[in-house]
Length: 350
Ligand SMILES: [Ca+2]
Ligand SMILES: [Ca+2]
Image (cartoon, rainbow, N blue to C red; front, side, top):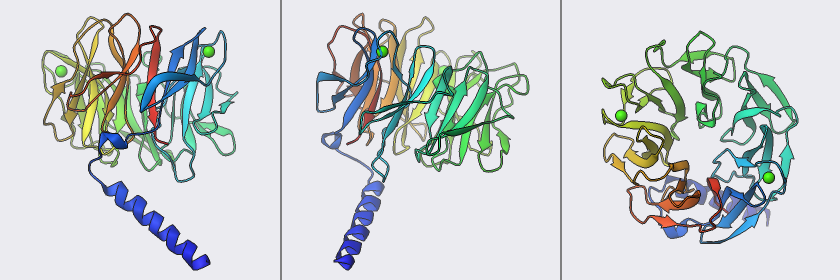
């Protein structure tokens, strides 16, 4: 019996390893729940089954507090736990368990501007009060400040922080040496690696670590003669910086890697506040605008667990509704028709 169990355990590990190596998935394999913020009496957390989006299930009930999802976890750990973090108005940080639907308020962070869970789901990087970065340990509810770096009050949002896939480093925007620059911070020894040194000449923001750990994408106008933003990539040691997206007259922002690291989704800003969705292969080929500029456009972009779909919110109808699209631009689908605002979809596999 015991040997049989061991064989079964080894087999299940092998199956996980083999499936982890797969290159492509059929979108019929994309099950699970899409969590999002949805307007009831105010914003609450809700989910819909990915294969049956006509029904929304309310899972938070904080009347008079605005609930936002802020972490596209998208993955199930071996322990069967999958978290998202969400804020309420005022920035109260909550950790939400997508299996038990329980929400755990983290009292020490009542004014949170950004927070992301580590890929191993043990820690949260928090931008508290737009003035201090902290690491919060989920297991024992302790936290400590990252005292050598400082979040910029000018850019406190959720896209200014990212975890390495091995959960040993974070990349973040810090202005501790006057200008905002992007740094890699080692959680083991506090070591800092400067990735950008553009001074006051150019912008740099929105670092996003690739799933294989080899690259960090970010947004900057540093190479564009017309000073429009492009998606750049750089090695985590600061070398081999180069431009990923082309387009002198277009503004590309907010890079987001696909789960297998082969594509990057991003936003295309038309300069007057309407974002379209774009995608590009991580080798720089197949750059595409996937949606039109319409209304206030696209926000809250994330990937499905296997990367066959991009899920996003778009304000094309007067309200934010949730849509999916293939990464190459095919099969645009409107999932919700509630006629009330929705935001921040985050797709979690079952
Ligand atoms: Ca609420
Ligand atoms: Ca550009």
